[in-house]
Image (cartoon, rainbow, N blue to C red; front, side, top):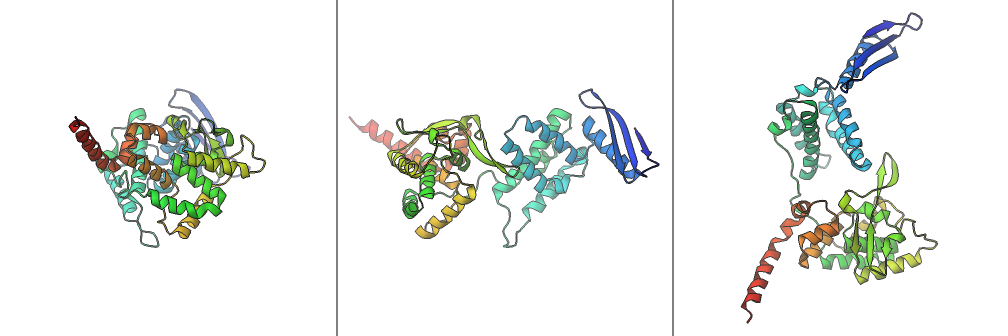
Length: 359
């Protein structure tokens, strides 16, 4: 390592030679530091990052973690992960050495988040707190598994929040029919919400649909892409998971709706987006329909829950529900909707009794 001052400019320069954690020797030079202290700090930070020392700051290690995740996760997933970490985790842990973060530090951070209240006096939701906690736990698990950190301090600190909300909002059949009736004078919103309710697809999947994805002859909708906002730009990406690529059958009412909608879209090409709008457009349309119909306000994503609830009411098996919703694992389906099944189990038992009692 070498830090020198340029007699002409008065600024400091650092030259270092370091062997990184892969065994590669790196020679690095950087000029333009105003002070010797800045040059030495840059050397320290660079060496920590290059050698992946567990004494590096949490922020530096997070960059190693994110670089690895970028090669393994969808860009939209990486963007969401980075946003959450930078917003809720780095402000507290960023400057702490990774190997000096203790369970008590995790508890103090959790207490700050759980005690937060916005201007209306509302806390973060339990599911949001759980999501944040999962992110920091994943980073420390990564450090334990790949960099030899002795233990994950999150395990001793315990978790915060809950995986599932106390109450899942969805519309009953009657609520949806009341809502959709008021949307008939908004043809785009009408077709969009009909599609989401009758197929259970996600917002991004809906907004990426093209006429080529609709097979009226076989009555199916093909899901193979998603419309997402990444780094300030809207892009078409692959669906959320491999199982999200699926073909969904349509009821006749949806086929009729989409045929009429496409017929009114002048000049629409097979690969054009069927709904060339953003998620905010859907939100405005939802707000209009709820006010006009008087039904309770739900999120756009809750249309997916409404579809699932309707299928459960129809006694559709969890495995078929998993396939229709595009969940990667059946456990995801059961964790999300299992609480809606108990009454159905009683119905099955009664049907068995009726069946066995018949001569």
